[in-house]
Amino acid sequence: MSGAFLGIDVGTFETKGVLVSEEGTVLGQARRAHRMIVPQAGWAEHDAEAHWWGEFAAISRELVEASGLSPERVLGVGASGIGPCMLPVDAGGNPLMNAVLYGVDTRAHAEIAELTGRIGEAALLERTGNALTSQSVGPKILWLKRNRPEIFDAADGFVNSTTFLVERLTGRRVLDHYSAGSFQPLYDVAAQDWADDLMEGIAERRRLPELLWTTEIAGRVTPDAARATGLAAGTPVIAGTIDAAAEAVSVGVSKPGDTMMMYGSTVFIIQVTESRGRDARLWYAPWLFPGCHALMSGLATSGTLTHWFRDRFARELPAGEAMGVLAAEAAASPAGARGLLVLPYFSGERTPIHDPHAKGMFFGLDLTHERGDLFRATLEGIAYGVRHVAETYAETGNPASVLSAVGGGTKNAVWSQAVSDVSGLPQLLRRESVGASLGSAFLAALGTGRVVEADIERWNPPADRIEPRSDLAPLYEAGFRTYRELYERTRDLMRARS
Figure 1 (cartoon, one colour):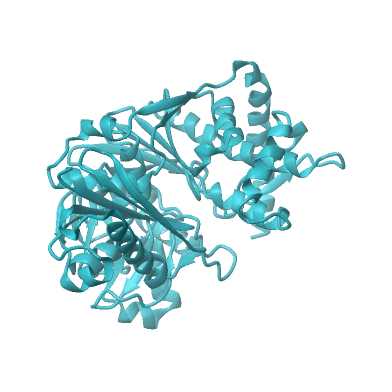
Figure 2 (spheres, rainbow, N blue to C red):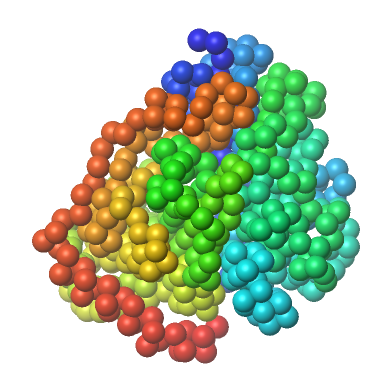
């Protein structure tokens, strides 16, 4: 074996790392759990020093030491992380507050409305490729300026999770173009550069990272970072990207039409497309490499919702057993959860409705329902959200034929089967479900020239396929109609209670 590549991904609830040989053999895995900080309803934060850098450094040390390899045999490092996030940092890259997370944090709804009115919906779609939503970074920077002016004024820059990690590793503050596509309205997708006119009143160019493509070498591990991580000083570090994109790479998404579904704290879907997308219901960004495009979508809750359910309704169960017990109870409940239906809008909703005021709902409860019915309905509610997104892709002329599935939810048979049954789409599973950390390691290998894109088939070959059960199609067709109508009929009531 000539060498290995390190990939580490910071997620909403845990950081995961993997060390992979140049041939694609997983040499070691490690993880650290953490919690999402929720100071108040609609807010979601991380402690970047502890959750991002502290766990990255600890996992790096653990993997390098356990592998028995000399640090010099780690040939490249790839970092990925949740995003888009908004973290103000000082000139040394140190956090000035907790990081404000991606679309699950809906604090900037007033700034979204203000900027949309100022710039205009049509101009936003044309210049940035997206409508402004809770996923957008620009409104969150403006929120900071309005509500924490002392922090805003002290900030030398506003960064994403990967920017923060790469700066700690190399001393260079960079952001990949794919991630920059979520910094609306600060990034011009046609120019593939920061948009000085659109950022007026929000942030100046000097306070935004330097733009690179994902696999470009951002720099090399500094002596200080080497001491913290156990890596060798001088090890190449790529620019990296948002976790969902690295997940997509890990399951072979590369050519137009390829579609990844990530079961994580949220469901996130990426489809590589032939050309630039223009539909406000979905998100667009340049893909990881020059000349490539992608359409994205994401629910606001999925894994966060299953964690919420476990913590509220399975407190008597040991933490390590609770999800297994709940899954077994859900499996004992029939398809359709005996008439129970869930709107999974427990933190508003992202695509395709982009409604921060949307509320979660259990509909159809009666005195016969048990915990297993509620949990099955929760999983099916997320599946209905996936179908809503899939139909939106089809309406834009970009239908998916199969979902390349990855993430922890693939290990829950009830959940993964429900997604195929409800959406009508098969799911392809790969040998490794490590996810974004594996994708980041592969991107590091790609950036250092040791592999080509097609080598992912060797690193992570197909292993299984989930087919939709056609006999359940009428049941879920009726359920989906109710799912859609339930939101439409209660949307104004939800907004009134915000």
